[in-house]
Amino acid sequence: MIIGLVAEPAESEGTPVAAIPDAELLDAYSRAVVDVARRISPAVVKLDVVGKGRRPAGSGSGFFFTPDGYVLTNSHVVSGGKAFEVTLNDGRRLPAHLVGEDPETDLAVVRVYADGITAVPLGESSRLAVGQLVVAIGNPYGFQCTVTAGVVSALGRSLRARSGRLIDDVIQTDAALNPGNSGGPLVSSRGEIIGVATAMIAAAQGICFAVGANTARFVVTRLLKDGRVRRSRLGLGGQTAPLPRRLQRHHGLASGTGILVTQVESRMPASAAGIREGDIIVDFDGESIAGIDELGRRLGEERVGRPTRMGLLRGTERIDVYVIPVASER
Image (cartoon, rainbow, N blue to C red; front, side, top):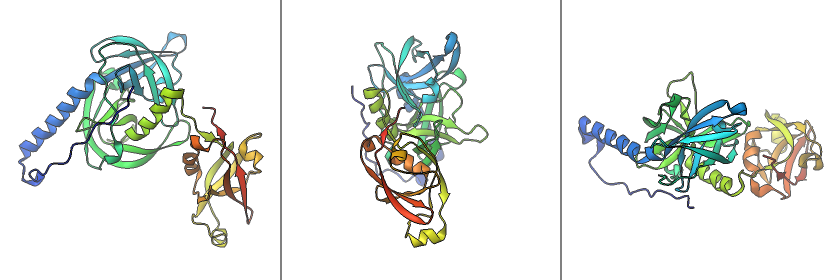
């Protein structure tokens, strides 16, 4: 099974946009959207979730990213589900099982067994540009294979997952998303899957979000291997807090904020290292750290079992401790 990339064709030196008649520009726009819908829609599915007592527990979207039946969707779509059914673009309804989910990035993978599957590989989201045309395909309110179009409104957004952790490098778009679109693909005009629809702001107009394809590729690789994404943890709770300016100057700290420790779990790495409630974390592995979300991003799988130096302020004193992160239970 290969999770591939779609090659990006070189930009052509055509007629300047300003010199092209409006009618031709609109026709080109329409052709681009029609072509994307034609190519990608066969890979998009509707995902129905059954909860306790065989009660319907919601639905969402997803898409085949491998030809052997693996479907990428959102964690919040499948969360708590006891059984799953996938409806293909050709009308077939098939049982599916959960391969794994990662609430930290709101991504999940389910699998069905069927022949004649159309799959679309994950593209490269790092090459996106603000203003670029994008197309969203999904099943809003159960209306199967609905197509909407818009642009990339912004890049590099952060979105807080249900777990409380920030999802980084989120794509903002004005392509309309509604309940039921979650888990569907966000596609470039070249037909690349560049994001997975994940959220919208209900009270706003045209503010929607998708997890970037590069994040999705990292996550699904681990879900297919282990059923989860291993991360490390320290066993502490904290919040971003400002540093007194005199302490910042006295200790030569690069950031004006740190992490105020509000909770330390017993028999966990932070407790074993001597970290206390009220300490302020200002340094992690030799680098300044500005807040709790940044610490979460640095606690990747590679940290498990690796002694790591942390710099703390305890009162007015600067001290260093060594922690050995453990694997997250999630």
